[in-house]
Length: 183
Image (cartoon, rainbow, N blue to C red):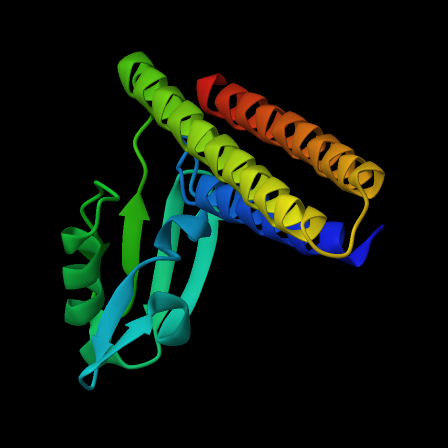
């Protein structure tokens, strides 16, 4: 692959990776520790990821258990969870915090699928914008050192990459939607 095309391949891959990591934070009726990935706890004045202040386990299908390394952090962790958009009220027994995930209603599942599709469309737009940037860069090259045939080949290569990543995004949307809709 041409080095000029490889740059844009890397950018498109990053857009897809971002979408996939975003999809991991969407809860689908079962407990998934990734829903906590974006949460930060005030740890001695520093916003710290929950994963760095306690042990996170999934003892049953619809429960996440957080065992903080310091008991004094229980209130801070609960506060971070309450302030987040997870929508679950934590309960604690003095040493561990438990998050019980309720079954998703049909309506909530449909809302999640809409959100999944919207994020997928945003990713497709990002991929297409990368293609546009690539084509603009190649047109600038045409004014200097590269022949029109080479420019055409570069544009074709970027179009093939774009098609591949759009297909990957569609597949990710389909898989995550299926996962959310499965009861």
